[in-house]
View 1 (cartoon, rainbow, N blue to C red):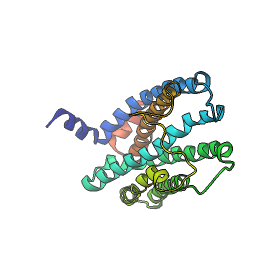
View 2: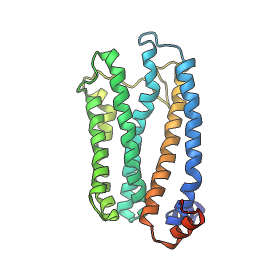
View 3: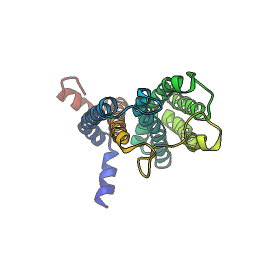
View 4: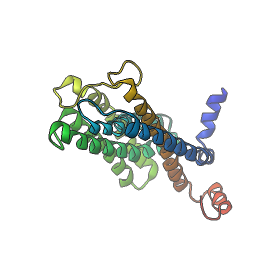
Length: 252
């Protein structure tokens, strides 16, 4: 077996994943904090004010990375869900369900910052704009996955039911992505491209890239931490969990 394939196969073992998550989650959070500090410093103190929007445009550095992550996390959740349903891998069920609260959090931040940004730009806190409306539906999809997962007592049955909903919800992602192209929208079109030419000036772009990296690292850390907690709950009573609790003095 190829070493990489073997490593992924071994990682599917609950004790192996627990050790992996316990080791790397703090590193991911540390990297997230470091990159977030650099990005926020650049966004607040280095980048010049926008010639049209003034300083209010600075909310972009939170809004845009969160919006990207709201879509990316759902896609990752659906991918894990598909793997879990096809190959019956319990760890992928756990990872898929761990994605949902994180993605919902990013979506709430996206909607909140978009509303705050929209008030001075559009003159209203909310408009049933195609982009805003579909993003709100995405939040409901996340909440639906979370609710369905916790509505069924058996964890594996619950994860499979919620995974189906996550897979169906993927159809919403391209609608959100291209909503400003397909329909008339108050929301501006795509002006920021991490890969490719962006209409945002380079002096304003670099903090955004740091913030994008920060959200990625935060997602990895949160995913590992949440999945590890769910893994321990599911494996409670197993010898390896009891040994770990005994070795840590009651702290897993």
